[in-house]
Amino acid sequence: MIVWEVDSGKDVKTIQAHAGPVNSVAISPDGKTLATAGGDKLAKLWDLDKGTEKAKLEGHQDAVMSIAFRKDGNLLATGGADRDVRLWSADGKPQGSLPGHKDWVTCVAFSPADGNLLASASLDHSIKLWDADGKKETAAIPLKNSVWGVAFSGDGKLLAVGSHGDSLKLWEVAEKKVRFAESASK
Image (cartoon, rainbow, N blue to C red; front, side):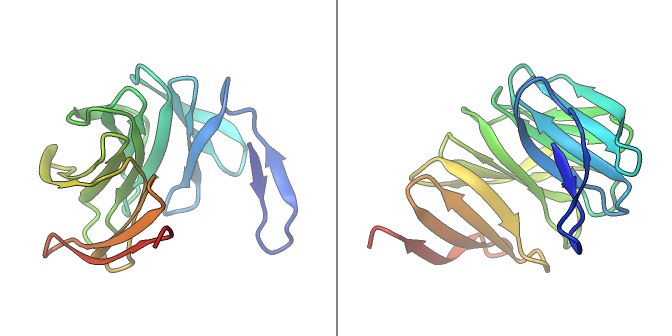
C-alpha cells in the first residue's frame, strides 16, 4: 500500500499492510490513524505518521472487503466475504457483529449526519441500514442486482447505491424511497 501526499503528488511511504490484496482503506477523522481491510481476513489500524501497525482486527472468517470510521473516530465498521458486518473500537477491540446478509458484504459506510446510522451493501442484492450503537437492523433495501458500493451525502439525507447491473440509485434515507435511478443500458 502506498500513502500519497495530495499537494505534491509524491508517495510518502509504502506499507506492507497485508498478505494479499488491500481491499479498502479509511483515514480516521483526526487524520492520525489509517485503517486497512485485507484479503487475508484481517483489518488493521496504522499510525499514519510512523507507518507502524497499531492494532490487528481479527474475527472475520474470509476476506475483509470494506472498512469505515464513524465521524467521531471512536467506532469502525468492517464488512467481509464471510457475510458479516463487525464493529470495532478505535483501539481495535471487537464491539459486536451485525449478522443478516446472505452473501459477501462489499461496502460499509457511516452517515455523517449522526454518525450512528451504518449502511452495508452486499452481493445478496440488498442494503441494510443499522443502528450501530443499538446493534440492530433498522431497514433493508432490496435491489435487483448485487450491490458494490454505498456512500452517504454530506448531510446524510441521501444514500448513493452502485450495483452490478450498471445502475446507480439515490435513496432518500428518511423517506425510505428512491429519489433517482439511472441505468447505462437505457
